[in-house]
Length: 229
Image (tube, rainbow, N blue to C red):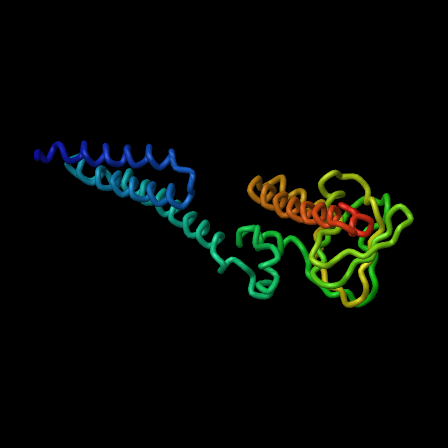
């Protein structure tokens, strides 16, 4: 094989790998293939001329370094290492979320145990805070009726989604544990990140589906409305 043909093969391989990479949806595989393609480009710039094209080589190395760092961040966000240790006990409840999105959700909110009885939402009032009840039963009042809601549910999710006022008054007794998020801040993050928005919508949709299932169960339709906030 002529030495003059080698650069042609190198750049052809690099171009082919890049083309295939951009047809792949999986971000980890895509980035790995781009790293391989960049290696071929670096080899090409090293032999195509009488002397290595150092500027092109260093530029490609810089691009590859940025791609590699992005790959590490992507892998980290999908691994359990991204789950904050202090909240790893509740991750199974949010397992629908990738670890990275769970980390983001937790950092946007606050986890606390109530030191006194608290009103979470008031009938007709704007929903400024979204809650997830980790422990404790919620007392709800709606259309003159009082009923109990189980733990591990969202409170205020309908108001968060629709921007309407709460449709019920809900209370959680002292000792209950909640996660709470400022609605404005949560919406801002959801607007900023489409991936996070989809993950959060999926989580809330799962919660709503569970409420619908409970409401439709025989003998429970009068005590477990589909939504209360």
